[in-house]
Each structure stands twice: as C-alpha cells, then as structure tokens.
Image (cartoon, rainbow, N blue to C red; front, side):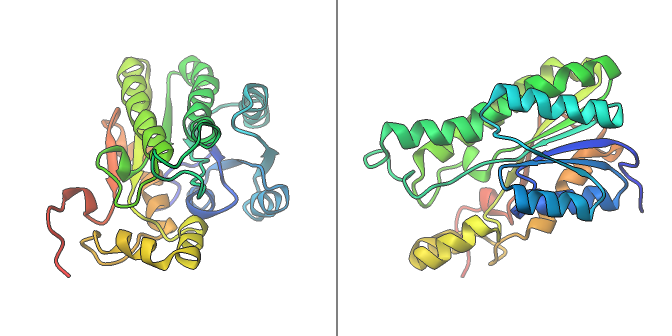
Length: 255
C-alpha cells in the first residue's frame, strides 16, 4: 500500500535525527508534504531536501518560532494535516530527584512538555478550520510506568505529554481532530547510543526489562506514526499508543 498520507502536510519537530528522521522518510514515502523543524540547520536542511520538503529552523520552546513554523507550513502547502510533535531531550543532568537541580528540571520540561503545548496550540486552529487533522505527540513508556533508570524530569514531562494528549483528543474529537500519544519503549537512537557509550551498565538495565530482548528501531516508531497519521486509525483518539516491545505489559521478563 502506498499513498496513505498522499498530499497531506506533515509538520515534524526533531526531524533531523532518530525517530523524527525515520518518520520524515516514512511519511514522505507515503506521499506527504514534509515540513521539518529542528535546531540542527545542516542536518535538517539536508534531510528536508532529500525528501523534497522544507526545513524551518525552530526552537520549539519559543512560541513565536513555533507559530511561524505552522504558518509557513500552511502558507506553503495550503493545510496542516499532521503534526508530529516529537522534539525532546534527555540530558545526563536529569537524574534522581536528589541530584537533579532546578535548572535541569526546567530545561527538560520546556523542551519536552511546553514545546508540545506550543505545537498543539499552533496546529489546532488550521485543523479545526479544515475539520480534520491528526496530532501525534511523543510521550514514552515511562509515562505509564516507572523508569528502571531515574530521570525525574524526563519521566514527569512525558507523563504530562500523555495527559495533555488524552485531554485534547477528547476535547476535539467531534471536530474532526484526533490527538494521540505515541509511547515508545527504549529505541536505538543517538540518545540511547550515547547512553551506551557513557554508561553501558545503565543501558543494560534498560534492555533486560524488554520482553523482546532488543531495543526498538526508529523505523518501527515511524510506522506507528504513519498509522496514527493515516485514515487507517480514524477511530483512534486520546490513546496511549504503546510501541515498547512488551515492556509495559511484563511483570517478570524471562532472560
């Protein structure tokens, strides 16, 4: 099957790497017009050019820049049909609550949670005017269960993304706009690879809990985004869409 999001405009934040990059490529394969947002100008422009899309350098914590991103998308392609609000960080300074200072807490909340609020707020007017749209917000499996490795602000931010997505999904369901939270398990992205390089023991503590015995791949998350963005998921909104290798369903994981 091809053309599942043919000629729809997809705005993807954090689109220069990891899950965002894989999603840019997957949605482009299925016919979407891509508007890629990232702070990495070089990589972002290269990726956007490779799929015939446009790149908009965007600090997702800045309301004016986020509003401009969605304005450009609508002005360029005439609609905003898909918003994949995916940009996020997980810095080493975000650890146990006993060790994480207020500046680190606030930075993670701004990038991971406030940015999703800003992107939803910017995307919704166009979608409501059209009477259709799909918003997919990147939460995490740690939004529904405690993390094996402490990252207090990250976990709290993803819980906020999940709760906000549910509320918006309920609020706007009868106006044609669906809002869902993608909840990946541990995924083989640059963030996770960096964790392996810096602290293999910490990374291994994550892997041991995954029933499938491996980390997810960005392309597997991109396939989930495509499903949620397409008409195939037309009766799905306000959902906790777990793509986690079974981690959230496991009580004891066999080795």
